[in-house]
Image 1 (cartoon, rainbow, N blue to C red):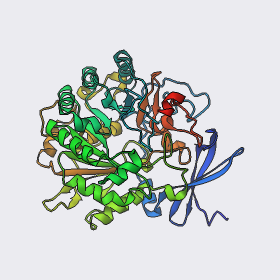
Image 2 (cartoon, rainbow, N blue to C red):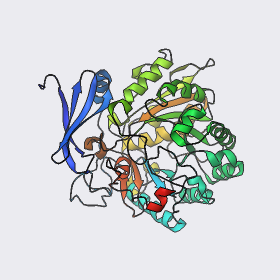
Image 3 (cartoon, rainbow, N blue to C red):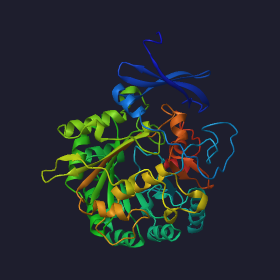
Image 4 (cartoon, one colour):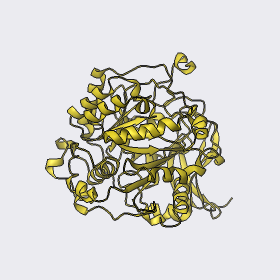
Amino acid sequence: MTCCANPSLGVTESVCPECLATIPAERIAEGDTVYLRKTCREHGTTKTPIWRGLSSYRLWGEAPRAYSRPPVAATPVARGCPQDCGLCPDHRQQGCCVLLEVTSRCDLACPVCYASATRQGTDASLGEIEGLLDTLMESGGRVHVQLSGGEPTVRDDLPDIVALVRSRGFDFVQLNSNGVRLAKDTAFVAELAKAGLDCVFLQFDGVDDDVHRRLRGAKLMRLKTLAIDHCAKAGIGVVLTPTLVPGVNVDAIGAIVDFAVARVPAVRAVHFQPVSYFGRCLAAPDDALRITLPEVMQALIAHSGRTIRITDFRPGSAENPYCSFSGRFVVDEAGRLTAAAEAPASCCGAPEPSPKAACCGSTRPSAEVARERRYVAGQWTRHDRDAPSVAGLESFDSFLAGRELTLGLSGMAFQDAWTLDLDRLRQCHIHVVAPDRRVIPFCAYNLTSRDGKPLYRAATSALEAAG
């Protein structure tokens, strides 16, 4: 075909899905769809849809690109992105949220699992966790810490870990959880709240057990609802986190939003994640098994009865604009959603944070990263419980005090070996602190080849894989 039939939207680099070698790539438009096309000399050409909707692609492309290199580059550039993560000097963004995996064990065996977690595995010791927290403070300051796994709640000492994170000076602590133990153990939830847990990112793929069986291998709807109720009683904010898989639960987007609206302010937000094909997933990723961010936004707009518009969503202010969307919406008495006014510039604007709010000298966050941290903490945390305020959030708390009936709607498109765009990866602000203390962008850390070979995450042992 001619270049006119497939207009180029820019060149970049990616990896080969077969061998994970770094190769040239190009973004091209075919009709209303943007594809990433790349060729490996050994394994041939792949072409994968990354954005369906040219108008919104151009709109998102107008967002400013705010680069801010991490204050500490722990690994040198040797083989080039994405082979030198740690972070290397070529990375263009400081961290906002960093995952700390406290266990590789899980009490489920989900057919879809980015970490390929099983019921067998290992726990990080408290000493190891202390070391990882030291690394984070030295390299990024007071990032948002996401306790992850595996399933963190399999650890009885999880409240001690939350308290440890708080004691090391981190202002926002989030738990990534399937909710099973949160539903069954109210005393455990109360201990987490007392220790200082701000928010639970709750795996939540639909409102009926058929969806949960297909994606998680178990009937979980009753437990998910109980987990939300118990977090609400303890004053812990809940963010519903659906993994969207075409043919399984994309048609449930509206029902998930309705479920969330009925449980505001206990549910603070819904954070949609189109399925990415790494770890343990359902099938090979042909085009029909891809859903892109603009399709999620259009589904939200259609479900709202057009009270929501595309301009009510914005790209991320710190990450590459094509990585995400977010919006905050007021819930009225009839359950309708309308765009909320933006928070005052003093708490969510662009000015550099004051020295009082600085992390630790050279690790002060950039204005964009600081704003993103405040936005996340402000929407995802409950404001009706007695909890320490995040630095710089005092005016934001006041702003939200009369507006508890707000719901955040957002989405994040994690990249896999087919969709990886190194321009996006270099601007990633969601990182994982690895057991060897390297800080690695989330998409690079979880990246696997077509046959399951990982780029960074330790390969699962044959014993764990069999579990």
